[in-house]
Image (tube, rainbow, N blue to C red; front, side):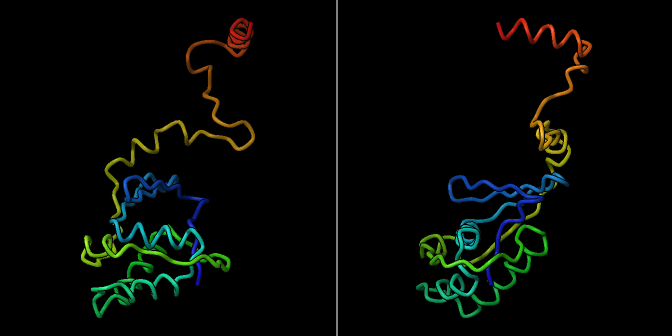
Length: 156
């Protein structure tokens, strides 16, 4: 099984080994711990779920229940609509044993809604596919004609 980020609803960023995935429709965001981020990156970069699990099982110090932990993590990611089934990928999986050990082989995805209003109010949500982000200039007190004249002067 292969997975991809649900790009229709989600956008993601990985900074300092931690993934943040934001649902652009709800404003809810999700934080992954270090090992969760490593698994996520492997999956969205084309490694199959089976390859990722095999790598986790082969890591020194992997607990006997690593498969259950992994399956619960994948179930959560799919349940939150973060990941979707994807087309067959052929990338190899690679997970640093130090990241796994640092997180005690825990795979974590946490849901947060504390910035929901702020994320939904962000003008990025007003992006139109055909025109991109263009704020409604009438909202700043000028008519469309006045705005057009001002823009002409700016381009000179």
